[in-house]
Length: 319
Ligand code: ACO
Picture 1 (cartoon, rainbow, N blue to C red):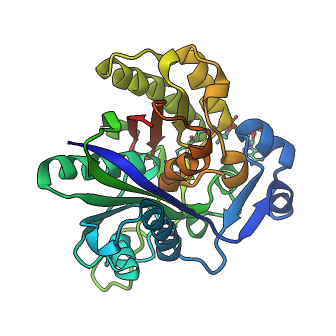
Picture 2: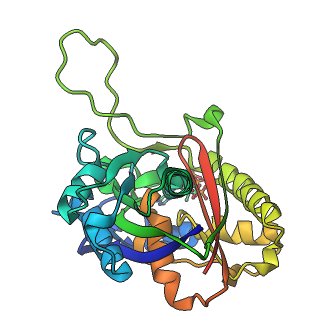
């Protein structure tokens, strides 16, 4: 027995914010954002919540799979922008979709979150007898941004992607590797909220994303090719044998650089960040959803995430 993908789902907020519109608020330009990142538009939540986006993506994945919510035994949400720390977003999604038998929890691994959550779900399916597992990446990062910091507010955005994994005779998940380098913990940060407190004397920090962009760029362009090579070695494949690379959609230049390091044409790297920006844990399942029309049976696909922690994770799939 193995694990395969039975359904995919995606949800984004209604409001589209273009580079031009953003340039009216902050000292930046369409030309700068486009040339440095590849981003043109992003979807920004006005009324939508992380729970709602995660639920919409989940409902679409379940419907695509034709599986009753009651038969989903595991719901994991990867997010750094939940609406509530308790309960987990996974519990709220399970309640909304009627997954009344599921074990539910959230995972925080920033932009690697979807791959980390998939590794946990697949291990639990292989070892713990879970038949159907829903893994969702969902973010409303716009509420965690300093909209005056042009170094971050032009990059991050909102959305959700869901994958329904099911146990099957055919195995689609050929290899996974994940890792962390806590020495880079200060390179991307988002302080947790502090409520009203009487005794606690720790200095309060602004609850917004801070990032050392250049350091993260160097980390991503070094670690991602290494991680992909590790996974390919496990499966005894070469970079040329991969039909489509789906990387975390942070920056088009990072993807081009990774393509060059692996010695494969950059056209093999799927990109949808021009529409959605960097949606952290949601970006890989959203990109997989958008790429699915291009995928043929038997194609080998790499999914690779990297981000705060520092963390990274790569999965090899056979479509
Ligand atoms: N508009 C105009 N100018 C800007 C903007 C902006 N939005 N942002 C920065 N600049 C300016 C800077 O002030 C700087 O000006 P200076 O030279 O006068 O000081 C100049 O542009 C260059 O700035 P850099 O930061 O060096 O620009 P860089 O080319 O490195 O691009 C970027 C910045 C896009 C952030 C890039 O470093 C990057 O993509 N890094 C990786 C980010 C990433 O991948 N994050 C993923 C993980 S996120 C997570 O885990 C949640």
